[in-house]
Length: 181
Ligand SMILES: CC(C)(COP(=O)(O)OP(=O)(O)OC[C@H]1O[C@@H](n2cnc3c(N)ncnc32)[C@H](O)[C@@H]1OP(=O)(O)O)[C@@H](O)C(=O)NCCC(=O)NCCS
Image (cartoon, rainbow, N blue to C red; front, side):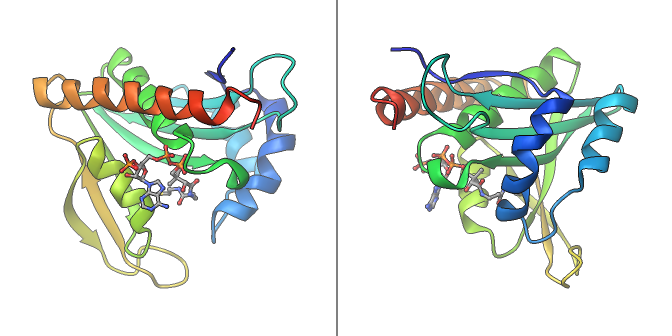
């Protein structure tokens, strides 16, 4: 069994990502926004989950990225393919982004999440993010954004959570994708 793999996002991945982006978000990013980050922003890191070779699945199963702002990784976006949610892909991607952020020198990770997005909030809480504030009417439709932030990423408790989440995600991904689901 070969599991889906995470690798850097390439501009050509956007052909598959853009329709999914519109399904995943009420205020989707444009191709131009992604391209500008991919080509012109050295502080941006974007990753995608691809199915294992030879398996009949969509070319992109998940995508996400962060900006390194001084010593803080700002998670810019994260999403799993709408037909493959609950399979550990979002968690696998978040752990990967946090690992890449540590590699790039981030001390903490932070993000905004819609107040109504309880699924994503649960994922972030599992990884050690705490709600530290609210940005009133942060989203274009007027919804509030919750600010969620990790403690120091080298804190043993966060590292243990990441280890547990990585193992949990891989087990779940293996269950979902072992038969090419
Ligand atoms: C948020 C999102 C990325 C989660 O991805 P996913 O692959 O479905 O999630 P996973 O299978 O990796 O689940 C990991 C954790 O997320 C949370 N979660 C996932 N699905 C959930 C659900 N239906 N209900 C409640 N919590 C859920 C849980 O904490 C879960 O771990 P647990 O079951 O051990 O508690 C996915 O729902 C998504 O793409 N949503 C649309 C885009 C979006 O809202 N992105 C976040 C923007 S801030």
